[in-house]
Image (cartoon, rainbow, N blue to C red):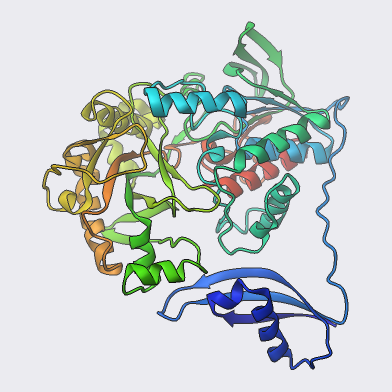
Length: 524
């Protein structure tokens, strides 16, 4: 007999197979002679009250073996395929579009401006240690895109946009732990993602696809309603190559692509987005708040059975949303600039989420009307606003990758911080008045938002926390429009805007699903 059952158990029981079997035995009223095997199918933490419980969906198999589950893929050899698609960008959207092409018998040719995983690491080290930004290879550009070094959070609410389970199973096929199929908020970890991305690259190449690193699309040529060719730049120089289908999966930081399309009078649109800061607290403090602990000793006891605590916060300030974004328990704040004269922050966590800090983007929602002063830039108005804020952060912090920062309570009280707490941001911090960096549009809203968060999470509003600027790449400030059903650009029938960079996704899984959706429409 096999049956699925729902359980609410203590954290201690959830991590102990024998205790869990006893719980299932009692619920199913099994006799002592029964042989019980169990498999946890879904798991989530319920920490709403002081009595923390773990919600489990368990497959119980009584007197028979558990079913074997093999994850299979159906990739075709496309080395001689007559149908081809040039994919610009190797982030989640581009890679999963390429994998879907293999399933459909289409040859993917991936054009990636940055370097492969191994070579990319050197450029990340240069940002952190030497404050040198390589504009083609950084946290945003390179094999795997921004997703490779932005935590590996796989939770998404976009369950109507595609098959989430298929995306997760594809990650497991390429080496991810099958725990991501179980956890309500699955997470791979920045320390493990690079190996998975390399495995995905191996699959694409093994089945006849192509990937070209250090290769940048710098122009495209159109005829009537079709892109006929693209111009690329690599170590061999410039080259024009014909294309059948062109899938743009460039990510939210490929500003030159927006500028190129705009210069070609190819339709793009300004879109709302959000800007703010990274807020970093001691992880033990967030654990204490979220797990209802009276002291740090209780934190230590509970954390033996529970993951590093996270949070999700939102508040309205005079009709404007202020909210947490990309919360990283046990994480690190990373320098994510794509040009030398800017400071940009983001966050990530290793798989164990065992660093001593918790960080999250805290951002303010902006509308198109907020960019009125930049209207001369047309659809690039929000992009220019974003650029200006990043350059201001760079200037205030000393014209290096040192980031401007301020203690949290000091920021809300308009008080200069004479010292700053230890922080995970490796290039270092400089104490500044963050209001001057953020300006009148974002600063006041953030102040009121933080005060409201302090009321919702007692202990959150503290000078043990530091805000680090700026968190500006939450999403693209530009949308590349496309047909609702056919997914191609309204002017160009073989151009498929895709993923975060086109304004249609907001994370690894949603971008991956969008890549698959676009691939499905290439030759439909």
